[in-house]
Every structure is written in C-alpha cells, then in structure tokens.
Image 1: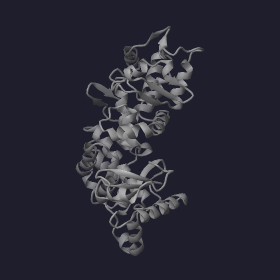
Image 2: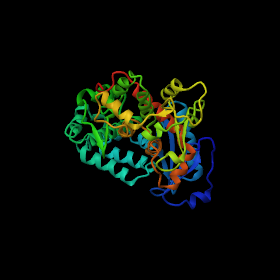
Image 3: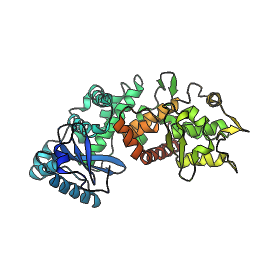
Image 4: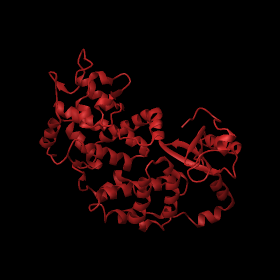
Length: 404
C-alpha cells in the first residue's frame, strides 16, 4: 500500500477501472472494483490490517473520497478508530435504534468476510470461512455480539475439538477474529475479553488435541510448540541447533541442511536461498529473527568460507536422518521435521492477523497469480520479517502448551 504518495489516481482511471482490481490513490485510499466500484480506506491499528468503506463511486466522487480519507487519517492520529460515513451518519441519526438492535454474530461475520476477502487469493479460502462458521458456529449466528459468552464458544468447539482438531482450531480462530473486529468497530462495549481467545482462557477448558497429520508428515499442534522448543533448546547437539533453525525459519529440512555461509547476511539479518536449492526453482529470501541469528552466531567460524555448510562437522554436513533420530531420542518419534511447517502454518492462520499471502510467501509456496507474485517481490519481505519475529517470540513463551 502506497502510504506516502497521495492523489495517484486520475478521474479517467476511476471511470475506466477494470473489474476485480484494487487501485491505490495513496494515503490508505483505494478504489475497489471487486464488487461494484467503491472507495475503501485501508489502515493498520494494533498491528492488524483493517479497512472501512467510504461509499460507492456513484455517490462519492474522487475528490470527496480523498476528503473522507484525510478525515480518517486525522482520526487515527488522534488515537481514535475511524468509521465509515454510513455508520457515522446512522449512529448520529438513530442512536436509540442502534442501541436497541445490536448486530448479530451472523450478520457481522458476513460483513467482516466481505470486507477482508479481497486480500485472499483463493476462492476456496473464502468458501471455507463462510462454510466453517455456518456449519460449526450455527449456534452463534443469531446471537447479539455483546451477548456471546465463553460457554457459547465452548458449546461450538467441544463437539469437534477431538474429532476434527484442525477444523476446530480454525473455527476458534475465525470466531476470535470476528469478535475482535467487532470490538474495534465499537459494536461490542468495552471493557471486553474475547471469549474465543486461546491463551490463558480456552486452553484451560479444551486442553490438548490429537496430533495433526497432513499426508505423511505428522505435525505438532502449535499450542504444544513452545514447550517442545524449550525441551529442544536444552540439547547442545548440532542436529538440535539445525532443527531449531529449521523451525524458526519455517524452512524445508533440505534448505536448512544445505545452507552455506555465503547465503547468510548477518548484518541484514537475511538468508538468501538460491533458486537451484528451492523446490519451486526460484530464489527465496528468508528474514531471520533474533533467535535464528543467535544460532548462526554460535556456529559462525572465525573465517567462514562462502561455500561451507552452516550445519556441518569437520566439513561433513548433517543429514535429515540426524534430526529424525533427535526427535526419537526426545520421545517424539511420531513427528517429522517437515511437519513443523504445518505447525507454523496453522499457528499463523489461526493465531495471528497476518494476511494469507504473507504466510504463504513465508513458506515459499508457488504463486500462480502473476499480480500477486509482483506484490510479494515488492512488499512481502518486511511483512514476513514481522511474522517470523512474532513466530520466534511465540515459541519462546514459557509454560506454553503440553510438555514435550
């Protein structure tokens, strides 16, 4: 998003904008043609990306949209949450009616999904959001947002928590996001503790789950990952350091095992994996968290050779079997190294507000859409850096999850 360049669009561009696009005017103002043609103001608050509608292009001119965006920016500078012109007008004209008829979870969930789905590349992802809330959170659909309790959320999750652990985890995360967004918009009065939150709340009622399995790669539930990492860090073997680095970077095991000092830039905190070592045959840059940098500094030779393997003993690189054997010695032989990528993916999708595209980019998944590929080349690195730092911080949390 271009925040520093204002008034990028021309009237002719607005009139001739193709369908299914989002065009930036700058300063958070976007022209959206995904569903009709309308103005959207996009901003970040508390580390989360949010947006509000400013009206259709039929009713709001480019000049007026810029004025509304400027007002929204001023509101943010004052520490307040901007609201759409329609909601502001309704709140002013019909405060009693709005108070008498609170918004239901079902209605707001559809509003929330419609607002954010433009950033999701996959139609399947949109369908899954709606379907999961419709099928598994049906009991919440007609409830007023402020009236939803922990008991209501547990009633939704308990029947599927063990039988469908991955689905249950996603449903919980989606309920939490909907309620958090409603709170941010003022639809739920403060003070408020989100009844769908996991940490220090539902984790005590729902407890551990069956281990997730994706294909042949057994994955550790992300709630158990901090305790596992605490146990892993007590081991000094090179295989343990390699496994920790692999988990911190969400890399494939072969990518980590083949890492050379020439690929590492400690000053820029960056690991650049050449195309010939990547599954997709495209260069992949990995932003390194402070925890990952600490591992590398411990292993750094006095005069590192560019082609020397990072995780090698006397020039001999470790094999994937070394990490597999380590897992067995830790009593976690049911897990696989590759499965930790699934652990990362589930955590990022369920427990963070990071965009789907950023999470997929962190995993170096192949991008089919050329426009999205260009977007990632320009903007994804620093956004992914924030994601990887957050992942490292999560893994370092004490007393998190079940004992490893």
